[in-house]
Image 1 (tube, rainbow, N blue to C red):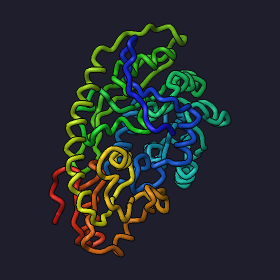
Image 2: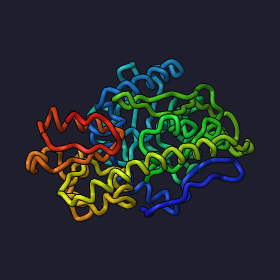
Image 3: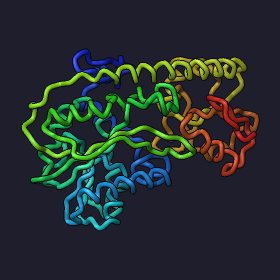
Image 4: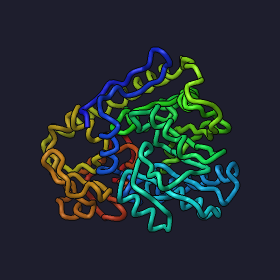
Amino acid sequence: MARGYDVVCCGRCGFVYADTTVTQAEYERFYAESSKYEDDGTATGGGGVPWDEERLGDMARWLSVRVADREARILDVGCANGGLLRHFQELGYRRVAGVDPAAACVVHTRRLGIEARQGALGSVPAELGKFDLVTVSHVLEHVQDLRGAVAALIPLLAEGGVVYVETPDAMRYAEMLLAPFQDFNTEHINHFSPGMLDQFMGHAGFRRVAGGTKTLSLGAGQSYPALFGLYALERRAGAAGWERDVRLRAAVEEYITRSRRMWTEMAERLEGLAAGGQPMIVWGTGELVMKLLAQTALARANIAMFVDGNPIHHGRVLGGVTIQAPAQLKQVPADWPILVGTLLHDREIVARVRNELKLANPIVLLRDRDAGG
């Protein structure tokens, strides 16, 4: 993968996206080999945590009203561990299937008694046939070849079939900012407004028949903005013209301004932490920690151990230090501070350190919160 990219705004239509040279094939290989959605305990898409279970259930119920025939064939592209399809089954739909780039996600979905194949939006196995509903939830923001991905939906649809699309809502990034530049990451390379999503779908011949915006719970009182639409194929591709979105750029610029302010606060905190030279533990190896290692004093800190709750990372080496499972913390000295390298799940990690692992190590947060001691 590339070391970085510019985020740009199209002068013609106003769409905001990552100007990256990484190919679609490279992205698909990344998702196949490095999926963070395999572990139900730490990932979304499988319903392994209460707020994700609620999200998937709400989506299935909303769609069940609009695709009421329980004999309808349903395909979830990017199905992760099959949580959405499981909810469809519970609502009485028997003919459901999933596709995901990660082999482990396919295995998890099959264990639910659901047909699942390895593949991506542009490479859905043809033998799966055609579907009355295709769901593409939090997928299009990951796709480099966006027009190709939307066009690839057409052959998947039976006569009268519809497509459900859900993505993050870039118009509200700043309003619900949780971590600086959290949406400028390896995976999220397209930044939609409701109007821009309609236009991309419209150029392939789709018209939105229902939809809007929603606010997703991430647990611990945190929220995330999303937009969604149900689309029917009504005309030949390319018939629609482009209408410039004049508001999207301003919304993303406000997000950048607020992110920079938060980033500066965290960087200053890490300067003090690194200066002492004491051995420390970093809990988390996600996008935020990678950015901090590249651009702040964290790179100079005496990191003795990385810890991550997702088993997919265990045993990997980061900066010459092996990533361990949380249980390994019981072996370290009690005076080593634990830096919680996430803002999205810091409360859960603090609770795990104190209540599950029963550790008294000092806890350092990236931003001020009650660390429980």
